[in-house]
Length: 141
Image 1 (tube, rainbow, N blue to C red):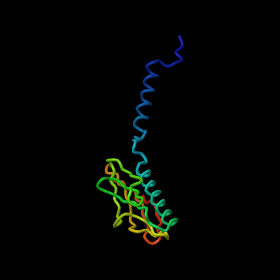
Image 2 (image 1 turned 120 degrees about the horizontal axis):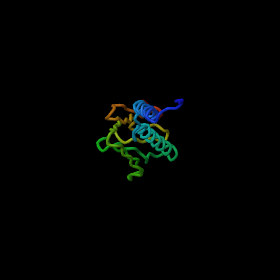
Image 3 (image 1 turned 135 degrees about the vertical axis):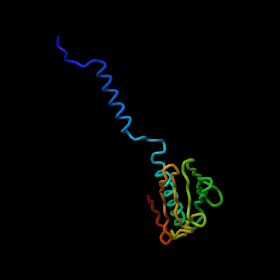
Image 4 (image 1 turned 180 degrees about the vertical axis):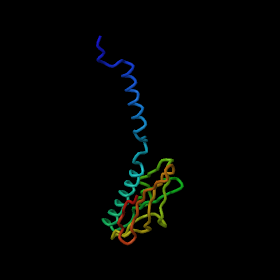
């Protein structure tokens, strides 16, 4: 009698070993994957929005206020909040400016600084810097 194939036990063993190796080698991806990128890019978009609005209408009624204790920042139109962004409990935010960020009619920032989001679990940080003289805003790793 010729024995040309594999037994069921050999096939199950091989598939189990492949599964174990894949489970160990594939990195864990959590729901927070790319979260710091998302928040920093959203802040950058909001900064550029208020800069353009200030240059269009030559008034600085739009501003961004950061509340580090509550882990939130607000986009303010005059005296009312038009947007509130809250970061997850795992993250901290801070802003080095001396007050709420706004812009002059020529795009120069009032209270420029650096907005930073910090992952408290991994201690990684991502920053958005608003350059004082030019109003240029850039993301730094």
